Image 1 (tube, rainbow, N blue to C red):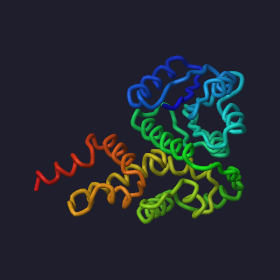
Image 2: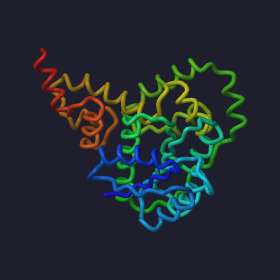
Image 3: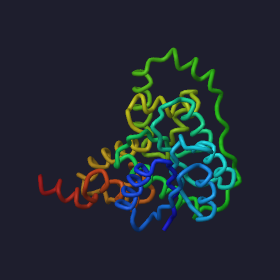
Image 4: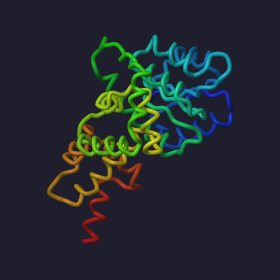
Length: 262
C-alpha cells in the first residue's frame, strides 16, 4: 500500500478528496492530510509518502513551493495539483516541478481516479526500476513558444494532437513528447490541451485507448493480453483495471457481451 499526501487548507475539499480516494483505492492508498504547504512538506517526509496531491493556494508556503521542496528530495515521486485557479503561470510552474497532472476544481471523480491510477502505475514502475540519476527536463523557453502559438488556430492544433494520438496511442507517449513535436513548452501545451479537449492528457489518452480496445475485443482470435499491448498498455492487469473503470465491466465480460449480441 502506498501513502498519498492530500494537502488543502479547506477541510471540506480534503474530505471530498479523501472520500473519493478511499472509495476507489481502499487497498492501495493510505491518505495523509495536511492543511498547508509547510505541513505538507513535513508530513511527506515523516510519513514516507509516495504520491502528493496538492492544492496550490494555501497559507504560508503554497502548493507550488511545497512541491518544489518535496521534489528536491524525491526526484521520482508523482505530484498532482488540484486547484481552482486556471492560470498559465500556475500550470507553468506545475510542469517545471515535473507534475503528473494539473486538475481544476471542481474536478470529477472519474478524472481524479484516472490520474491516480496512472500515478500508482508509475510508482510501481519507479520502485521496481534501478536508480536513475537523470535530471528533470529543463523548462522550455516560454516567450518564444507563446509567440509561435499565437499564429496557429486552436482547431488546427486540436486536429494535430488528435492525429498524433491516433498514430501513436499504442506507444508509450507522453504529454511532453507531443509538446516537443510542436515546439511548444510543456507548460503552454498543458494549458492548451485542456483548452482543446476540456480534459487532461491522461484521461483523453485512456479514453482513446479503451475505445480502440473495444473494436479489438470483438475479434475472438486476439487474446486480451495482446489487445492490451496493441492499445499501449504493457501491463494487461492495468489495462483491465482502466477498462473496467471506464466501461463498467472487465474486457472479458465486454467480449462476452459482444458475442451474445451477434
